[in-house]
Length: 509
Image 1 (cartoon, rainbow, N blue to C red):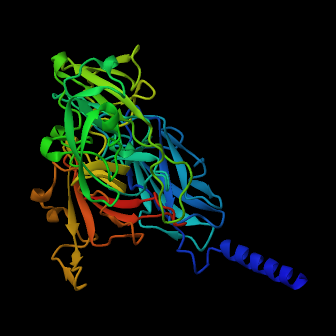
Image 2 (image 1 turned 90 degrees about the vertical axis):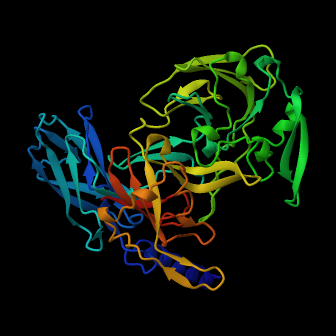
Image 3 (image 1 turned 180 degrees about the vertical axis):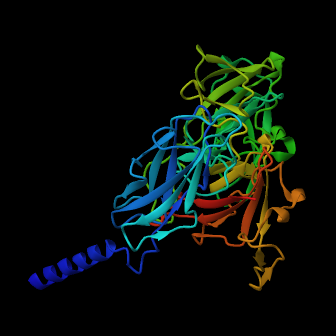
């Protein structure tokens, strides 16, 4: 018994020792890089975080030394930093387990109109000799807005439950993370009156044609006419159901393989995949009140809180129930009437004015308030929604690791395909296109940029079944300001194998 105890203890110490050694053969090199080579500030900004990314979690504590040089900028007069750079060098501590580090740039003055002012930061060594410098070895902070040059972005989608959708703006290098269960519907601020659904939460909506009295609707209400809807049975064979009541309708409203629909009759209860104004589950909102009918809105699915096993995901929990909703408009804004499905006495009503600075204004039916979700319309290019759902080809489909680009905001994007593998013969055909490293501004094909389908990236950048990135593609994006970027995904999981930790690199052309 003592021998077994001794052996177990020795093995434990051996494992512990190997886990604390950066030289372990099981660990990739520990590299340190700035997340963005260029960081802009506006006149209103008083501080900016300079993020330093690591290739994996640190297994040894240490210090990153950073030097800086100002262009028309003096430390203590025009800027300071945290940690302090009073000595001329910034010492950034790294603790065991850290995945990144941050230097806060504090702006004390603005650039004089017509002049430039900036500070460049670069690595000045590490006190751990095993640490290596990554691909982005310097970062320039500008005192005025400029388009970002390049960067490495660790997506803040939040891990295996993908709790966040992330908006990213290439020209500033800024990502904005928002919990995807904070809203259900969003109102379009353009000239048309449209309502979008939160596809990242699996929200759905079905019109009750001819019914305008919100409080008259309950689960037992009859429809004004029967609906012939398609679904699949337990054997995934197509079948048709006849729906006569609200209760029968909501049985097939949640997004899933058995979701009801009838494309031929334009009975689809999700927004379409492409994201155009004509493809919303809600009909165009009329300025004639009597033409706007009540909708049953499926509030989507809870976000699970239990982490998945390494390499797996858990993104959809229990269904969140249903509400009845009616939306009106006077072209300058919207009035939302809503109530729990079986409420017959009281309803809530809120009026929201259109805001031209934003494409969509989000609203939470469950909390009864407007929610800040999308950044301003010219301040995001790609939404890494994490989860994405829609109805197509007779099924309600849900995808993970999903990305859409801002087609409503005039952002164009296309995929460059390097090669393809014949599924029957496994033969590889290489295409005559530049590699990601070699792709330059002159290689951009304007005619390939897609402005009418937001799902060009989608989930195609990874192979979920194999648990790996696809190396046969990268992407080219043109933002609304006319800047061109190339984009390449560089990670699918964290260094510990957890899904929901994507990473990409980008470079302005």
